[in-house]
Image (cartoon, rainbow, N blue to C red; front, side, top):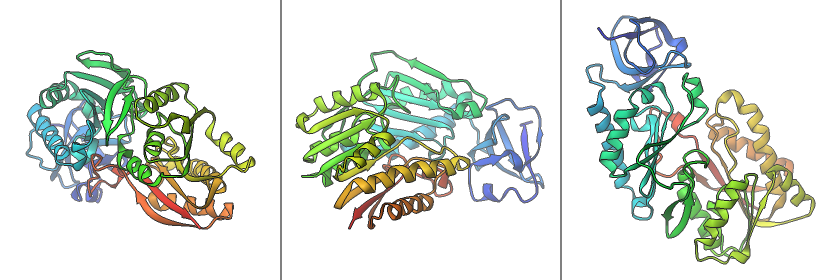
Length: 396
């Protein structure tokens, strides 16, 4: 008989709305003795089966739903079908005609909780971030190689969230082997090198693909400041769009080395590009004190608040950098500012930026909103999947 999680009375409402997470506080008791990653049945207090889910005894998210059909069979064939569905979705996206790098699997929003897979040309980078995904790791890897034709798969299961699942970090080639420190990809005619072994997340921020294109379209003739430039995605886009000059700030020497390679890989005027290794907060203050001015500023900082519990500290950081950006922004200039913090909602982020403008004595209007590229879909019933938010602001 299959093990089961029986919910407390009234705690089945989110599952009936097809939200895939079951939190520990919703569980009345466990029937059977499931191990981490095992498939369990989720039942309401009356004993009615609601879903099949992966069990995670050490996580606050005690179970993640594979299927809301209790009669389904969660096996290798089930997972292969889910992967095929994800790949088919990406094949139909317009971006598939303009790039050889895409997110192929986006976790819960693709019905594969805890699994993230990015493709960089002929290399896949996979993250197994939940007990359930880890339990089916070998079957998922086999299916990915079969369905994509990629022989090399690099695992980057080194995110902090694995610790919350009771899992240790793991990284390295799990299928095939090749020199993958610099995967060469193409995005809308621009060439980028991606370090899948040592780079942040899986090596490149694919979610910002369309937003880089927007900055490219806006950059002509403008002096651009790219804060937290990482490997230079926005900087290269701005140069390709005709920026008069670009100053890019980044604290990581390794990331800047790749950024310089990315500039060199493209037919852009490198004399208009300046990289600085610096603490971005401190350098923005120095630029403010020196009365520097820019016509287009991009702020794409790292995740300040992974969870809502850290939102208060994150709010201070977001306010600081945006206040400084407003001080540096010329009248008529534009600020493209982002948050990838899941713990900061779009409403809170807008409020933070509004407060920064007020304190800076700047008047600005939202002229566009940014989100993740379409290969990072958000399931309607899983709003937590919408982590990236951004604003394009015009200073009066």
